[in-house]
Image (tube, rainbow, N blue to C red; front, top):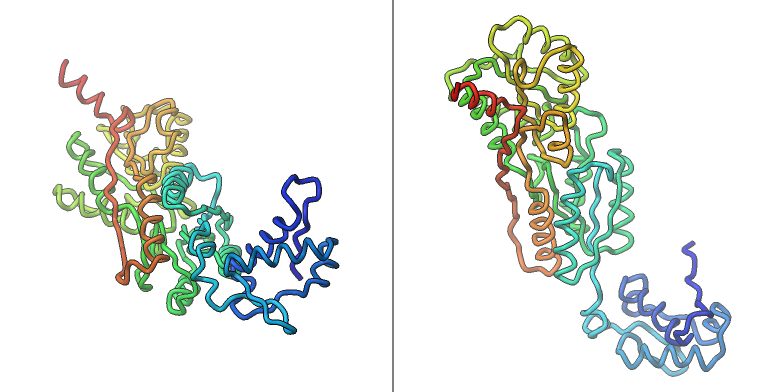
Length: 380
């Protein structure tokens, strides 16, 4: 049973106003629905430990706002047309953001774009952490639906590391239209939903083409098992492959390294030691690029003289590394802003067509890719 909100007697706000606002919030949040009967005055007095005059004043305020009406000898009821009142129309709507990891630096940039757009459009942003857990993700969304939030932006969890997502659950809430929602960062190809993502294929293609322009002919790819099911990782792999083929270089599955499934640390170092020319590595996630950098330095090799690196994401870590990281920057801020715009339009019934947006990332060139080293050699 939900705990009853109590009046704050040390608060300077009159008690009848506080009681009015408690009942009003329950109506605006649809805990009390049109036609529902309110507790009678004596019950309100007992529940909130107030006098009869205070309870009557609170109800009179709600009647004057058109939210409730009195029926003599029967009681007080929520107005059938409560949603047409100024109070209901001007209420602050709430959008929730369900994310897999609050510590993820990329999510911080997304939240900034979401919150700013929500604020500008008169919406409140509520943040929920699914801890990258499927069950918790479902619980969070179900709780938000029960609490009558107006819409949800969902960054899907992939707890098993294989990129499997809550496809059946997302399909169910999409088909049942239980709540407006937008997916962000990754999407479900088999489920028709609104989504906002980076053009991961383009970002990977651009990165590998940059390596080619610098003269690298041995270009490997380091990624996670999510390449099997997660759209972002799969599309980065496809962009990597196509850039090689378009450059006249073969795609060799032996040059695909998957974190947790093969000893990529030893294999990449072995490959670098076996070649006269430096090798290049396109890394699908920035945290993996940081791990690779440590492996390289721990084995006495140099970045980019022995192994050059391009990562993906461009968090604040990228410029603070011993060798600044060349990386594909995702437009996190714009991604959040765009997701908020789509969701608010859906909430306000301004759109009936799906919005599936791919935002173009950009390549940020720093020292780790070897561009500066090549320029210095050309000058010499």
